[in-house]
Amino acid sequence: MSSFSIMATAKAVPEKIVTNDDLAQIMDTSDEWISRRTGIKERRIAVSETTTSLCAKVASQLLEKADVDANDIDFIIVGTMSSDYQTPSTASAVQGIIGAKNAIAFDINAACSGFVFGTYTLASLLNSKPNAKGIVIGGEQLSKLINWQDRTTAVLFGDGAGGMLVSNQGDGEILSTNLKNFGDKGEALLAGHMTGDEQFGETKDHTDHYFHMDGRGVFNFATKNVPVSIKEAAEDANIDLSDIKYFVLHQANARIIKSVARKVGVNADKFPININHYGNTAAASEPILLSEMVENGLITRGDIIALSGFGGGLTTGTIILRY
Ligand code: ACO
Image 1 (cartoon, protein in one colour):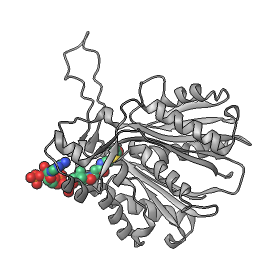
Image 2 (cartoon, helix red, strand yellow):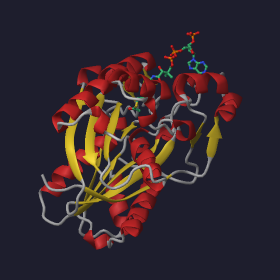
Image 3 (tube, rainbow, N blue to C red):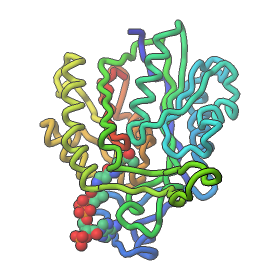
Image 4 (tube, rainbow, N blue to C red):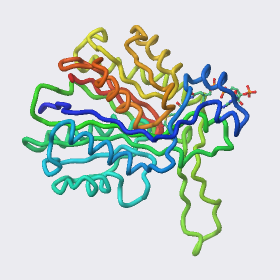
């Protein structure tokens, strides 16, 4: 396998902060309930930004930080479940905005596992071409899918984007990948339903864009399957869990993260949490956290880290890499 060297990480979040108290003004909820059950205190909501603008901002920062010319990018992958259009893809729009004329660009939808699935795909593509560079971004405007009348889902999600620029030259490498789909459990988390043509058939139910979720079911799925994914990935990498400096998990619920830490028998300090600031930003949550950790000097060259996500599909995914 060729190397997988992360040259830069970046994040972009909307300016508007919506606190739990703000939500308590418009629905029957409270800061106390949301904080205790999820760890979320506030989230960013896109008012003037879009999925595309957030992802393009990340891509521009990545080029600048890595000091790479847009013409030298070969691949752009965006993990998203909230693209602005069915077509063009967000990745294609980003390619146009940053002027990466030589890049092929496409989206991947694996919901909250989108960044891990996108990273796996980028690694495979980088393997196929000598001296190549690619960008993988997780970007979401989940507020488009929120029903603000439904307190069981509305308090959970937020908007944002994060990503990394990767080269297949250098010392970084992927040590193992463990990706799974559980398609038979897909109904536990639905969003963005689109119905067929009504002109030539029977009238269908009206399109329902909003999140519908079996919260307890997804909670149990995550706390059962994410630890398995992490343990299998460590075994495949032939390393001990204690060799992993940080576990960068999808930020869906602080209680899920703590439960996963307990189940794999690793101190919770190794499972950083920033959900308090952003809520669940699906595919964006891991690269936002990763970017903040790199910026704060918590992750440095040579560190082994695990990226681990779960979500709609249902899906799980873990990638262990040397930074
Ligand atoms: N404010 C106040 N009360 C609420 C709220 C709210 N926002 N939401 C629900 N409640 C009430 C319920 O009505 C229920 O009341 P009842 O006991 O009178 O019936 C009570 O709180 C408990 O509800 P539960 O759903 O049992 O609460 P739970 O502890 O399971 O927490 C939660 C709910 C936070 C959704 C949790 O189940 C969870 O985090 N699940 C995982 C969800 C997830 O990660 N989804 C994203 C997947 S990633 C992706 O692909 C997008």
